Length: 313
Image (tube, rainbow, N blue to C red; front, side, top):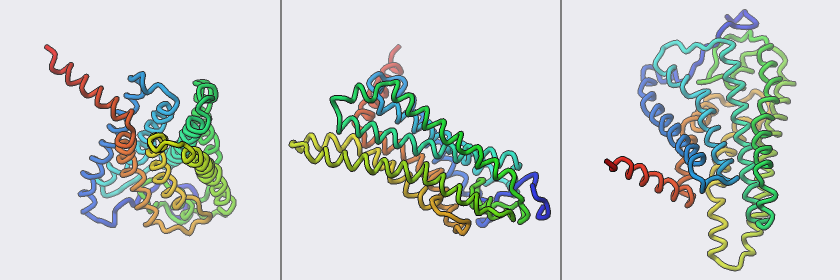
C-alpha cells in the first residue's frame, strides 16, 4: 500500500496501543455516547414541543443540540465498533465522507454559538428592539447561513484531500479521519493546503470566537450598569450556560486546529478529540439544563405530565 498514490482503504490505529484492554473502553464510551444522544434529543424535543421555548434563544439551542448529535454520529459509532475488532479499516471514500461531515458540522456548531451570542447581545443591550431585530425571518437566515457556509467551504478542502498522493502508507494514527494524520501520509506538497486550513480555522473558529467575545464585552458593560443586584444576576444567569459552552468548545478546538503545519502531537490530539467527541456532548445537556431555569421548569413540567399519564387508568 505504501507504493500506491491513492490507497483503496485506510487502517485506523485508534486505541490499538491498549492491546486487548481496548475492549474495556467500549462500555464506558458507549454509555457516555448514549447519554449524550438522549440528553441532546430531550432538549430538541422540549424546544419543539413546549411553546414557552418557542423563542430565538431556544431555537438556536435546539440547533446546537442537533449538531452535537450529528457531529458525534460521524465519528463515535465507528470508534466504538473498532474497539471490538483487531483490524480497523475504513474505505478511502468513507474516510473522505467522514472528514467532510465531521468538519462541516463542527464548523456549523461554532457559527450557531455566535448566533446565540448575538441573540443575548440584542436581548440585553437592545431589549426594546429585540422583537424587531431578532424576528423569526432573521433567526432563520442566521441559522441557514451557519449551516450552509461550512458545507460549501469544505467542498474544496475535501476534494484537495481526495487528490493528494498518499505514498507514506495508509495507516492513520487516530480513531477517525482527522486532518493532521491524513496530511502526514501524503508525499505531495501540502504547504498551500495547510495555509488554506489555517485560513478556514481563522474564518470559522477565531472569527466567531472574536465576535462572541465582543458581544459579551458589550453585555457585561450593559449588565454592570443595571442598578439592582437581582437584575444583574438575572441578566448574567441567561448567559451562564452559553459562556460555559463557548469556553469548552473553543478552548479544545483552537488548541487542535488553529495551528499551521503538520507538526502536531498526534497522541495529544487524539485524547483531546476523544474528550470533544464523547465527554463534551455528554456534559452539554447537563450544562444547558442545570444552569437554565426555564429549561429546568419545562423539564419538570414534562416529567410531571408523563407521570400523570402513567398513573391515569
